[in-house]
Length: 295
Image (cartoon, rainbow, N blue to C red; front, side, top):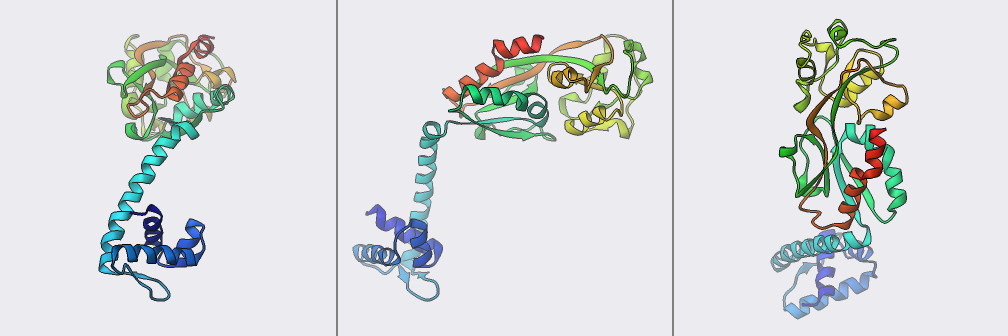
């Protein structure tokens, strides 16, 4: 079958008029009419009722339209998948709002300057731990090493919990035993629900359960409450290092708790052997970033 005739028929049937179809395909209306007529002649049947203001499909036209429309969609999807790596080199990175806003966004300009051929498209999430592995090339997750998604994983930084607050809340550091005397802010979502208990268990210090005003399900709101001076949050040294360096948050006490959990960059099966995914993960977990974390 003549591909040009089929695409002309599909456009007319979908748009309902020859003029809109001609505009979509950037051809003159008489040319569209001739192409559909040529297809009807080749098949030996009438495909359209040429009524006004819109054309309608004959029973034969209905059968052909449903077959052609599905085929064109499959072809378009295939062409986009083939062209994407070579034309745009787009990398879809799925991560949490916390990691994106507190860490990644400040560092992406340097990556883009070093790799202008790679377009990083961020997909962020906050209230949900669920990520879309089939629609992403790299997933950045906070989890334990044996629960990671993807075909390949690399550690960005390990968890290092430390109490933090705004300078307006506390003027001098505390000993860890004094923490329960203060307003402790709790992130009660997913893996973080028992963070304060995990942190305090090693010291034998016990804190009262949080009230409703100290409980947060959103990391963004949780962080903002600490920045506002509403209490002491249990934060992550490396994730919030920019806030600490800027003096927006201060370390409340000397005790840090390192765990096996951490932030990991996971390359999905969709990315395969993608050069863009490899370059991005190498940059994110490479010596320059690690040196900055150690500082």
